[in-house]
Amino acid sequence: MSRFLFVAPPFAGHVLPLASIGVELASRGHDVAWVSYDAARPWVPDGGAWFTVPPDPALESATGAARAPPPRFLAAEFAVFYRDVVVPMAVAMLPHVDAAVAAWRPDVLVIDQHALAGSLVARRRGLPWATSSPSSLLYGQALASHAPARRWLSGLFAAVQRDAGVDPVESPDVSPHLVLLFTSRGLAGEAGEFPAHYRFVGPALAHRRDPDGFPWEALRRRPRIIVSLGSVLAQHGERFFATLAAALRDQAVEVVVGAPDGVLRDAPPNFIVRAWLPQLSLLPHADACLSHGGSFAVESLAHGVPLVLAPVWTDQFATARAIVAAGAGVRVRYGRVGADELRQAVHDVLFVPQYRAAARSAQAGLLAAGGTPAAADHVIALARAEPPAAGGS
Amino acid sequence: MGAPAPVPGDARRDEILREIAAMIAEVIGEEWVREKPITAATKFSQDLEMESIELASLSEKIQARFGDSVDFPAWLSGMELDDIINLTVGQLVDHIAACQSKTSAA
Image 1: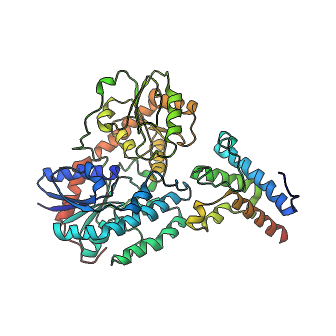
Image 2: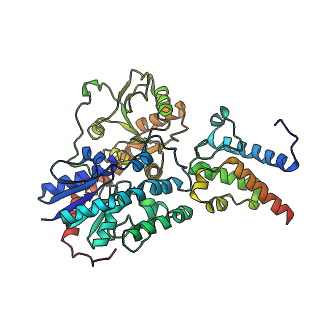
Image 3: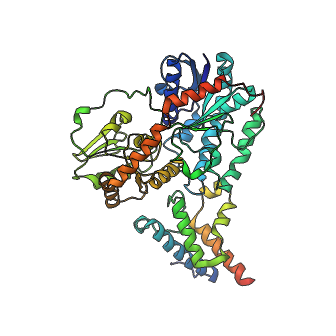
């Protein structure tokens, strides 16, 4: 049996796939520990060892709702995210990840793509490590056609690696041993060829438990659309939801919306609004979804449900492009869409049969990718392989 | 525009600003500039919230109108991240005016 250390940022969409794999590993008799911020703990399964990274006020302000939205062109939003969040978080987490490795003595580290401290420690100690990529868009791929953004970040990335005592590489978020992508190769198609150690496992849905408390008795009629825009809607959430209400008020469709309290006022009678949705439990009861293009969009396709996509930034644009290219969704502009356009988009994905057919086809590809058990197989295989040479990358 | 009599350079800039503002309105939709007209101080990111596909459309329009004397993508690519974050319409107008005077001087 092997020992694993999961290194996670405090972002739900990045913790949940790791949590799924963690439970799977534990069920097969392996030992799993976690190192992250306390904010991640609600999503972490019980039972594993836990190493805490103390809260970081600078990080909280960088990820908080109050920050100005970064530009969404020239990949500047990626650059801002890496500069203001990923790199400072790597510096803050580094000593704590190092202490966790010293105490837990893992055979393998499983590291989220945004928790760079994990890869710095793994490389410094010559331990095998896997990259977990819920966004399916790694730094190098994201910036492949954006030379300025690479230029803005290359010095920063080199410095954080040198300071940690490892030789700088171009993409420190990408493991040379194993990269887990929670999508299918078909949906990741636009990036072209992938190295053999990139494993497309589809969404990791096993062992995921949705908290209780959803009013299931309130569900009344089909067709039904599930609207979940993640935690990004601090900006313009009110405008978008007002547009949604105007678009679907009095339409013959039930609208289940995840929205913070107060953002969607005077919801129409055909709307069910909750601050939090049990997304995975709802998907079998959905005819369409509206998503910003995060992991929920891929989970929706894994249930054969077509989408309206309103991407807001970074990897969401790529995910939305891939789903539109697959014919399983319609894209609208989050900040600009009007009621008529949004009504038409919802109508199309609900009633034009090609969207559902394409979603079913994408579903087949995603489920064939193997999901949580396949991801667990890959990290276990990595633990059994010969360890890399100490000091290697 | 009111106030002091403009010198010729300013008049040229005002004209370019009007053209660029019209192009932006076309790209992002008239309804987004109706309440808050575009000025030289308008920021592409914070105020207009333009995204990649819109910037690409604007770039095409600039190319079509001003020709090869203005290489908008190359100009953007040379900037630092914080300049991109704070980029204003006025800076683009100044850049186009500078490119044109360079071309006409040559």
